[in-house]
Image (cartoon, rainbow, N blue to C red; front, side, top):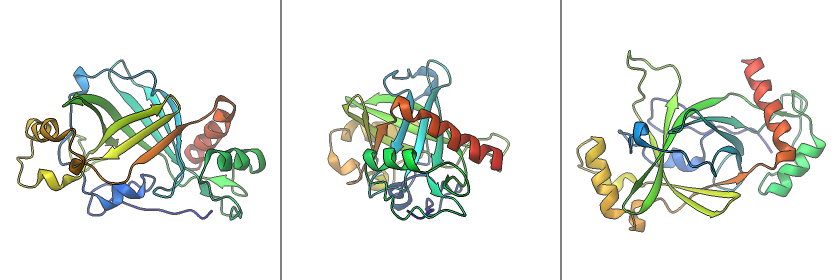
Length: 225
């Protein structure tokens, strides 16, 4: 496994740990849903990991900020400067468990280049649940508001799997760039598969016995930075 970075093409923010599907699709110029009127789903709270062909491997920790929103911390799983992780492709949770069992966190093992933070909330439109990710970092304006947001449809196949499918922005061409206008399009097309990307980001819940590894990796990158 080699460290890889991908970014959202044309976006202000370079979210190197967001899966490749975000890099291939346009971002939203407005958020969807009102975070002040949202409610978190306790079943989503916790630490998840992305392990599939469409994404670079990364942990995502959903920590309740309040009753309405999460603070999501994303930490990539990368190869340390003095490590060789070529035997670990990380395509399944079994691969991750083997890595955790055999490889330490640090320069000679698993490392991470950065941590990214997001404000995340849910909203229900047209009978479907959606999740908006708002990047939280240093912005070049006084409002500290980003220029782009990422919006996903939520699907829960089971309690340990979270599928997030990004909205395809083609249906928003020519639409006024306001939250209400975008939400009207979503309500009308919520059950229309043309609204969505063909790929999804699959998150798998991290098992309790592996949480220490995530905490060590997060501490490693925070201390390094």
